[in-house]
Structure formats: C-alpha cells, structure tokens
Length: 254
Length: 326
Image (cartoon, rainbow over all chains, first blue to last red; front, side):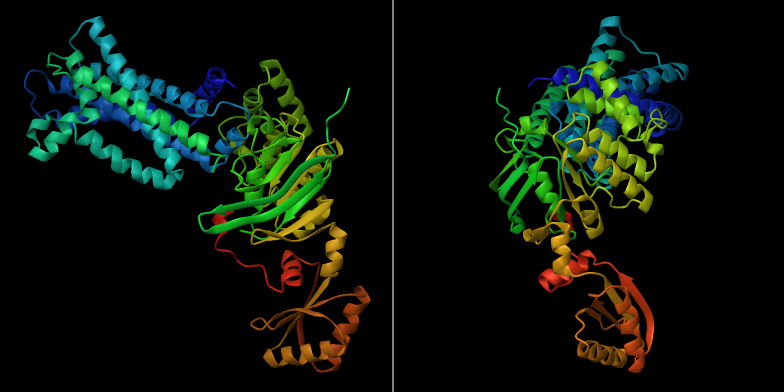
C-alpha cells in the first residue's frame, strides 16, 4: 500500500491551488512580507546600531526566518480547517496514503514560504539591502531556509493534529510563534537582552536559523549556527514526522 | 464460478464502544440486506454517529464484530474502505476547489487513473444535477448543492455500501426532498444504505428497516409500519387556557377512553393519540367545548421522534449534554 508519492503530489497541487484562490493566503505570501521589510527597515532602522554591518543587511535574515516561521501558522490553520470540515475524515475513509495529507501540504507551504523570501529580497534590495557573499553562500542560505521552512511547517501540522479547532489554534500559535520570533536574534542582537532571556534567545531554533542565514549573507561570523540550524531542523522533523504518523495511525484504532 | 456476494451487506453484532467511562454504544446488532435502506433513528448523543464511525473504520470497535460487504472491518480496514462510501455530518467539500476538482481529487485518491477520474467526475456531476455549477468554487454552492456534491464524492468508487450520517440535517425542505430522491435512485441502482437520522419522517420515507437507539442501545427495531403501529397514528394537541382547564380536559378525555400521550403543564398543552382518523378530531373538540373546556389552539401532527421515545421509553427525548461524544 504505497501511494505516498502520487497522493502527496495530488495534495500538494491542492494546496497550491488554495494559495491562488485564497486572498488571505496570497496577502500573507506577498503583502505581509513587504510590510515587514518596510516597517522594520524604516521604523527600527534608525534606532538600532549593529557593529560590522548595516541594519538592513542585519535585518533581512531575521525577516526571512520570521516570515517562514509564521508559515507554520498557515499550515496549522489550513489543516485545522480540513479537520473541522470533515475533509480529513473523508480522506481517512479512502484507501489512500495518510501521511500524504501532511507531506503534500508541508511541501507546498515550504515552497510558498521560500517564494515570500524572494519577494522580500527584491523589496529589500530596493530599500538598501546589499547581501555579501558568493553564489555558494546564497545557495547554502537557501538550503538552510528550505529545511527550516519544511521543519517548522511540520510543527504547524503537529499543532493542528492535537488542537484541531481553528480558533483555539490561532490563539495558541501566536503565543508560541511570537516569542520565538521576537525573543531571538531576528531583529536585535541578543547580547542587549537580560541574561536569562539572552540564553534562550541565542540558542533557540529561530535564532540559529537567523544567524546561519545572516552569516551567509553578511560579513558577520557563523559561530556554528549553520550546523546548529540544520541539526535543529532535522531534530524537529525527527520528532514531528513520526508523531504525526503515529497520530494518524491511531485514527480508527482507538 | 461461485459468487461470494452475500445477501447481507452489513452485518454487525454486539458493537460496543466506550469513551473513557462513558458507554457510547452497547451491544448494537445491525443487519442490512443488500440494496435496502436501514435507518438508525435516535436523538442527539444516542450513539448513532459512533456506530457509523465504527462501521466505516474511523473508530476502533471495543467489542463485537462488523462486516461490510463481506469484509471484516477491524481485520482488514483497507479492504473495507474500498467497499464503503461515507457522507459524514459535516459537508466535507473543499470550498476553494470547484465541484469538478473536488470529485477528481477524491477519484484520484481512490486510485482511479486521470482519465477515469475525469470521466467519473463528469458522470457524477450529471447524476447529482451539478453539471452547470461544476466549474464554480464549491464555496459558492448552496447547502443543498454541497450536500449533493458530498454525496457524489461518496459515490466515486461506486461503493457497495453507503453510510449517510444525518444526510439532511440543516437543509431546507426542497433540498431535503432532492437528497431523498438521490438516495432512492442509488438504492434502486443496487447500493446498500445505512443512514442515521433524528427525523421519523425521514426514516419513514427512505428506510426499509428502522433501528431506534437511545443511550447507545437498541430500544426498538422493525419496519416503519411496525414502529408506527406501536407508536400509534396522528397526534392531536390542544392548548387550553390554564392549569385548571388542563386538568379538566384531561379528565374529560380519559372519560372518553382517549389515550393521552403528552402533557405540558407550562404551556397548558395536552396531546392525544388519534385512533379513528380525521372525524375524531372534530368529535373531540366538540366534546371538550361542550364540557366547557376553552380550547385556545389545536394542532394535528404525525408522531415525532419525541412521540416514539415517549411511547417506547416513557420518557421525552433527552436534550443530551453528551452530544459531542457521538
């Protein structure tokens, strides 16, 4: 019974179709990232000094990862709606591959997040973003982001499976994602934070991804963040994928 | 060549399911002959949906056995899934896809080739009167159209057995009759249907056999006529001016050997079972008026689910707090 690939493709295409037909998601993919770039560039840009690079160059890596992190919300919400409307239940009565329901969606969401990154690069460039690095650096940065995006989107799926109520989920995911993206190295140097917060901010997965992308696109040092970020993403997937699989297998067996 | 198709499409015995300490379904037996309709009739929280979810592989069966289309549901869920179609309580349509895309997606996930899926979707869109709306987003469909699309999606694999969980709840009367017609057509084409409903008239209209369940157990079963014989015919309900008038009316009705099947102290209403048809209505009203009972309103209605329960259990349908468990 292995239809994982074919079914994943079908559900991937479904998610892509959703993107083009849903104004909220389209806005989330294009307008929101543009807004973030402009707001942070111009509101904080004058107030925050970063040693060794301009604030725009420092900021962009943070905005990329922040935007990707919010992608987890899209994954969680769309899956929660599928649960709520009985669509997942219909899928469960079909002789199809259950993991494909999540795999197809997370791949689509990861691609969508990366598309947003490209939009932000263009807008960033217009407002003074000048990344420093060679093609290999950029490719590596892209790789880190794709992996992070895929991993975080599985976290979203996991949330939706355990809290399949869209309203509750919306509240909860803000409580999780907001601190992760703001108590991080995304917008400021964590060295300026109080000690306890700083320890968290420097080591959590969002910061590691930000630092990795930042080191690959500016002259700032990586300090092991590239490897750390990859390990974090793989770690998240190692926990999330089997848990989702387990939860889906449990349907019909409890 | 021997044909192994049995004449019984659904055979379940002793179905039992608990959620924690709550016994949702206890020892339910169901047998549905091929190409017939059986209705599970019961109030919210009675365990109807739980029975359907067990039979459609969505819930584990705690005790008892279930076979659908000759396949043991617990032992071979994937083989069972090829035999069944399910239209759940929620209309499971993707609102951002068109009607056609919805059906093609389900068809492809049911292992039909691309060409087959397109052809099958087309066929079902026509059969369920959705051809004109086929290329519009399902989000723009009316409630009745969504239900029909949902029903069409359950019919993709041309399942032997179709499960319909409250297929017309929330629909307007016309859409309701539309859905009934579609179900009748499917059964005429050889599909076996197990449906759940809270409406006696729906069970009456569609079902060959009715299984009445309450608190997870079967409290009655039989054909619609058999049940109605037990419940009695039409109901006549009087609203009188006050508590004293209510007592007075009850006394006078009892004196005439009329069976009082319901009494509402707050609304001063009294309900009796009619046994002799329409002329009895006029006679009863006349006699009460003659005795000086002031009648404010009169209603004649067919037995409702509440009447069935009242007759079978001596209790009104519970407004159940366990609804979410079903």
